[in-house]
Length: 138
Ligand code: ATP
Ligand code: MG
Image 1 (cartoon, protein in one colour):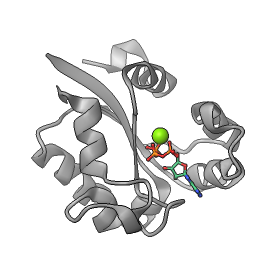
Image 2: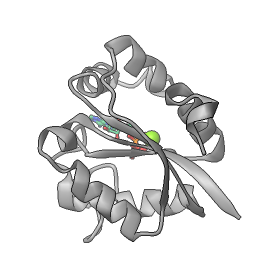
Image 3: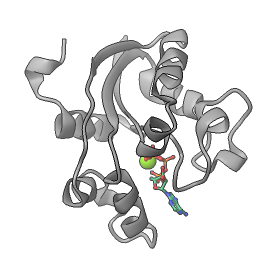
């Protein structure tokens, strides 16, 4: 059964002009782009999105970074979308990411790691709703 996940092309990748190449990887891997937009979020909006990480030492750095420039939030669909996108992204730290993954190709560091992907069904649902209204999802 097909499944939806939520992803963000992060500010570092947009700044470097990698958004198109990352989208190409995503489509090549068989995902349908259900919805996508360009957005710039405030620090408070980034804090709301990453609320589960509020107690982590890197929370300030992470939310400063995510509000530092334009991003491309998107909803993706395919069978096993959540797990398959995480695999395509590669490890959080690009130094540990497998060859051929998006983070291996496009990410510079654990903080500036090019792409976000939901880690479970409940988080995907929250994250899609955080950025998209129902009428934008077809
Ligand atoms: P994401 O949630 O963005 O898809 P992830 O699930 O691979 O990434 P998480 O553990 O959820 O990783 O961390 C969220 C984000 O916080 C990471 O993508 C990264 O940008 C940042 N982050 C995680 N660990 C660190 C760290 N030790 N130092 C700096 N930033 C970090
Ligand atoms: Mg995560």
